[in-house]
Image 1 (cartoon, rainbow, N blue to C red):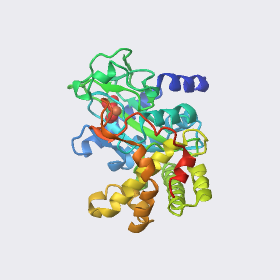
Image 2: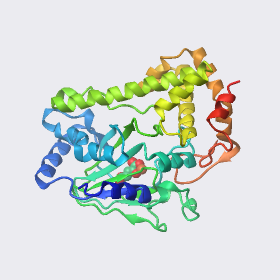
Image 3: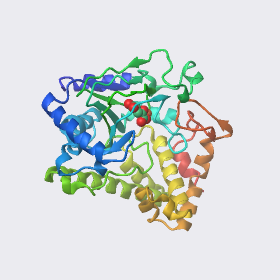
Image 4: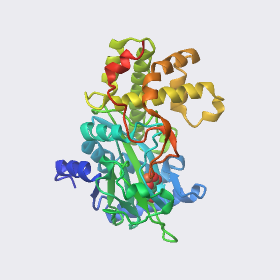
Length: 374
Ligand SMILES: O=C(O)CCC(=O)C(=O)O
Ligand SMILES: [Fe+2]
C-alpha cells in the first residue's frame, strides 16, 4: 500500500487528497460492517454516530480500527509527524451537503494563513472517509485546499447543493477503500436517498510536527470507553490523552508568558508548540482564539459549556482578571484580523462578520506582536 510514500505525500499536497485502495480485506469488512451496524442500532437515529459512545466488547473492532497502522500509522507517516491522535471517530449514515470548506473563520486563522502553514509545514490535521459500502457521494475540487475561491466558486452558496463547478471530480470509492484529505479543500456530497451508507469518517491531529493545530482546544476522544478495548488499544487511548495534556501545558505556558510580557518565555513556548520558523502568525491567531474562548467561557454561565472540557480546563488555569489582561495583549492583533465593514465569502462555515476570511494581518509578525504588548 505504501510503495511510494513520497509520491503519496506529493499528491496530497498537490491535489489535497489521496485514495488508498483495498485497505480492508473482505472478511474483515464483514466483521466491521456487523459491529458498525450493532453500534448504529444502539445509538439514537442520527446522520452520524460517534463509535466511542456506543462501543462494547463485541464491537471493539469498530473503535480499534481507528488506531490501526493502516489508518493512524499511515496518516502519521503521510504527515511525517512524530505522533498523531484521533480527533473524531464517526460513522456517516447519511450524505448530502453542498460545496464547502470545513473552515470557520470566526475561530480559525484567515484562509491565507492556514494555507501558508499547510504549504510550508504540512497539514496539521488529516481527515478520512472510508466506506464500508461502495460510496460515490463525495466530490472535491483538486487543488482548492491551497488557494482562495475562484470566480465561479465565489458565486455559489452551500445551500445550492452539489452544483457543477469547474474542475470538480467525483470520488469513486469501493467498500474498503480510503480517502485521506485536507478538509479545507472544497468538497460536497450528494444525498444517498434510501441507499445504505456506512462510511467511517475520522481524522488525526499531528503532535510534535513542524506546525501547530488550526483548531482551538478540540475535544479529546477521552478514555471513558477503554474498558471495552484490548489492553493495547486502551494503552493507545491513554497515550493520546498524554499528547493532549502535554500540548495543553505548552499552550498554558505560552499564554502565561504573554500575560507576563516575558518575551523570552513566550519565544520558548512558541518554539514548543510550533517548531517551524514559517507561518508562526497562523499559530498566534490560534492562540488569540483560544484566549478569546477561555475568557468568554470564564465570563459565562459554566453550565453552558460543559461540552467543552478542554476549554474549561484551560480556563481553570487562569483567573478572570488574568484573562482580561491576557486578552488585552491580543488587542492589536485581533484588531488587525478585522475590517471596519462586514466581510463575507461563500463556501466557508460562516455567516457575514467583521473578521477577514482570507487576509492575514499585513506587515505584522511575531516581533510586532511582542512590541504590541506595551
Ligand atoms: O458526507 C460526506 O462524505 C462529507 C461530510 C462533510 O463534508 C462534513 O461533515 O463536513
Ligand atoms: Fe465537510
